Amino acid sequence: MFDKFKKPIFVLIAGSIVLALAFGIRHSFGIFLIPISKSNNWGREVFAMGLAFQNLIWGIWQPFAGRISDRFGAGYAVFFGAIFYSLGLLFMGIVSTKTGFIIACGVLGVGISGVTFPIFGAISRSVAPEKRSISIGIAMACASLGQFIMLPASLALLQNFGTTLAFIILAVFSLLIVFLSISMFEKQIENTEAGNLSLKKVLTEAFYNKGFWFLCLGFFVCGFHLLFIMTHTPSFLIDKGLSPRTGTIVLALIGLFNIAGTYSTGFFGSKIRKPLILSFIYGFRAVIILIFILFPITNLTAYVFAALMGFLWLSTIPPTQGTIIALFGVNNMSMLYGVAFLFHQVGAFLGGWLGGKVYDLTGSYNTVWYISIALGAFGAIINYSIEEKVLTKFERRVV
Image (cartoon, rainbow, N blue to C red; front, side, top):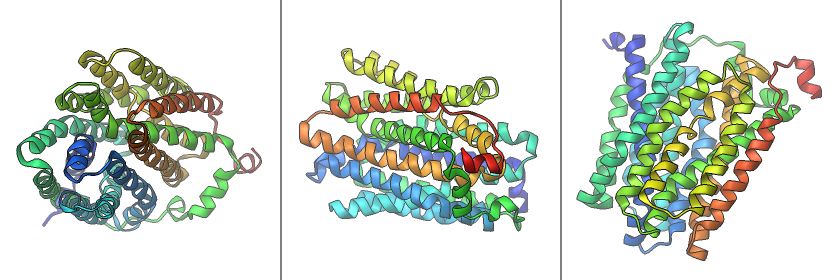
């Protein structure tokens, strides 16, 4: 009955819509920080800890969601992920205790792991090999477009209905993903040698390669930057006397310019050494942040910051994936990218939490901005030293 919805074009359309919803709703959480904190008489650390915990759970749970997707098809991961995603949004809106809010964010983290990266697997398996790159590019562009669209939509809900009802509406809206998962229930997936590799065996291959660990540390920096900026920039701008609308536009512009950035790094990755691209991204982020906080904060400077940072936002993903493939081959990419992504989420946890903690202690975000600059410089240095070459098994064990 539903076989016609499992054609490649439907898988791509459904998967792109799911990514737009999942990333778009999540990307809007920063505008809820001050309203929720004030309504519950919390410091900003509580909300920040909730989002940090969400990202940590996402990183920890992602390998399990990936295993479900690889063994049984992405449909199961997306279906159950959508349910957890919706429940997490619902609980975030109705709980009034600190512990309850943090747990709700954790539930959402489990859901995100099911409705994000398994989508790419479903799309890749449904299309011809020569169309995989462009198909994934379209899906990632839709994810960025979702960030651009959902921010003003979430702000409108917040202003018209308040925090609780806004989260409930978003929870109901996210249930659309349950129906979209129909196209991603796949036929029996053939097991391959790569698919049967255990995490322990793959880590043994990577353990002796310093380039892989430098890549992971760079991804840690990326996660720190992303969640700190996404969570705290709207509040930072309000503290500087700008309107909540400015913060919303800033996050929307990040999502919009991310489309061009992701495509650009994917394009140049075939022409320029990928670790060099990563080095440029992290170093340029440090420069952008430094200039942003040294100059007076206005609407114009905030928008320029958003455009430049948006161009570099998820642009780390194509060269990171490409470098892993260059070092270890395509067979180990999914597992090793999962390990690197865990580092990313640990960085996100620290960036989100530390922003709230430092603000509550000092009344300012300046310390964390400077930490972000230092981390950007660190990421630029370590990625520049990575050698991009395919290693034999013997070489992997002696590097």
